[in-house]
Image (tube, rainbow, N blue to C red; front, side):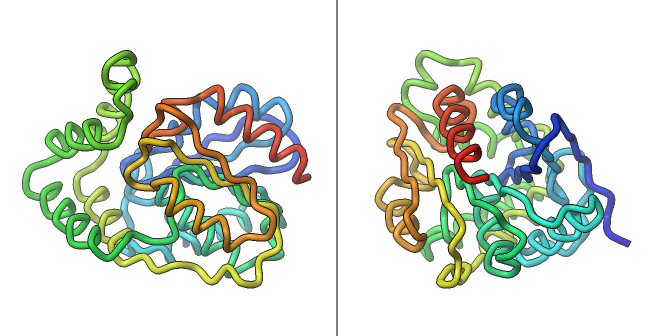
Length: 254
């Protein structure tokens, strides 16, 4: 029996499954829901071990992808548009590679194929820190390194929102998600033909524009966008631009 996930569903229409990243929850996409739910059924779960969903002890990108495909089965969804942020974009890519006929389009925000080798040790160290010390220090570091200079200087409410989201995470669930990310490998995208949108920020150090452009080259006719004065918390830092890009992309991809 699959672990029960915390899920929110908004709107009617073609289904859009939205998958958050490390340290995030389904609320990462809250700024986009009012507009998207006018046209689509938006389904946004908390991944196992994140937010309001309990950890399962089986934390890996493959396990997350399988759980999202099972969620589709549970809800009777044959095909969906996938929207992911950060780690969620890796999950989306693996779902599409595993079951291409079930994915209508991919919208990847702050995307990465997998962590660079140099980052894997740091991510494992973060898992150990979460278990030993809790989330406060991690939250402060993520705000400092993960948001743009403008966000920190002129939009303190966004920085505070990111900090609160991190501090609300269960330490063990967060640590397991870190370990899943540290072991992540790129998906085989060679057979994919679905439409793809890739969005990142010009100050995103996790998904820098040069790396995202390289990832975009693996898709057929991708839509690649770089948002100015934006860090890694793209949906919060540039909500209007992300919403507009998603609505236009998803409507065209139907």
